[in-house]
Image (tube, rainbow over all chains, first blue to last red; front, side, top):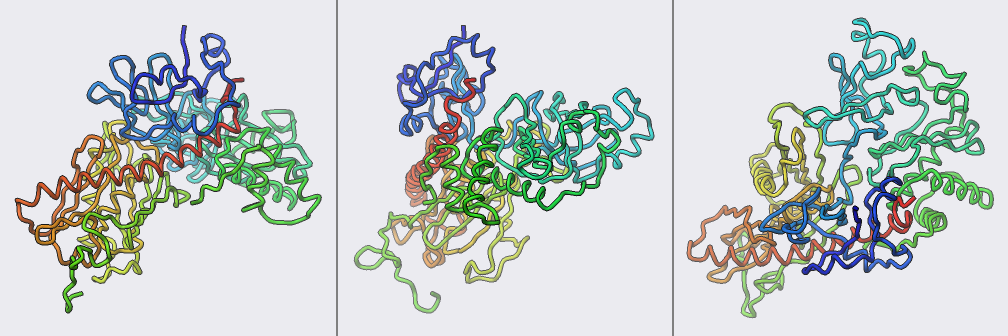
Length: 339
Length: 253
């Protein structure tokens, strides 16, 4: 069976025996059970010193290419596997790859992404998704008003700009890849489509983990209708005024005709404030390289509410207060690395 | 500096800024100063300060010049009006700046693994914030750090510095007054393999001295690489520590 081991590079082969560091390789639960995992260490025992060994930089020799296969982030020269980026080593059986700490979004089929229309072309839209190439959204992969079963006609192709124009934001799923490596998106679900009533945040894609759901809702104490959050895997995050249960995902009050509306709903000042506070919260977490999750955002918002009760203040949290928030919510000690 | 000639090396063997011949200027490196670029870095070497910002790999802004099997690199160089070049003020499209941009592009084209980025474009934007000699080597060093920061695949670090010659004595890392007076050479190399990706001269130099200077330059590039690596790894370790402290054993659910 497979084995996943976490290894630190040393000049000799000795790093194969070093299993003190857990893998950050993404694992599906099924995959986990199917694999014989050698990480029987708990993460508590890991100090920063053992993590540092795990980091390689460009041009650094990792191991011999005679015994190992090279994966992403590496190249082979003179029978040696050499890192080509700065990041952490990931090893699956004999495959060695290095995951860069910061990079553009690398798409995978099934990913939920948020993008911005940059161009309208015949039968398709070009969408900027923070990837290496612009994504393509075909006219045939969107739901048009009038129902899922509706046939697309020539008149629809002429009216494409009425549905999605340059600059519009949308949430979509990666459907497939073209031969040239560009991704094809689809919005053939009522969860997907044009975005309005909110604000976009651009974060490093590394901070968004694959979760069961990327649509989150903070319930009403947070603004009059709550706040909806969409965590796009490409690092784009959409924070918007909350919708009620029935309006979400094609419930009874779902307005299919309004899907391509260009007009924001009326949002009360309290609602706007809640959106701004949640956006601020997410940006603070991102500034401290904290990976996002729905529980983390909810905890952070609870912290803010708590603080506002004891010491009412307006305005964004920043500086020392932000540091304290990150510490108290995540337990992460922030060593000043500004030097 | 034109009326009274500068004393390049005084009787004590020190240069005009009290450095020894093989001593580099103080080097300070900072990563990600630019919030919206994919990667950026500021390198300050003595009184020369250069910021490089990398955008991409991304969809090419113009169709022209794109390639279906490899990425393209475009470089733009700008000089801040207050940067203190005593010469004429430089603007975009200036011949001298275009030449620096071309040198940087030629230096990095063989180092970036461009075959991994077909149909894409990597834009490198250089801003000279203050100039006191060695703009090209400082810009190359900043670009290397910015590319690493952007997570773009490189064969190796590429580091660079200038080497001058006073009589028979080579001098490392020239400042502006020295650069004006001495024949000099800009070396950029990949220290791990010792490959030289750029050796540029704008002045005449005796051929017998060239090899010695080139070797010296390649050696000095190694020192700069070590300095860069420690900064890059320190930052990387901190980022990894933070994300792992929050996630715990990642995705072990």
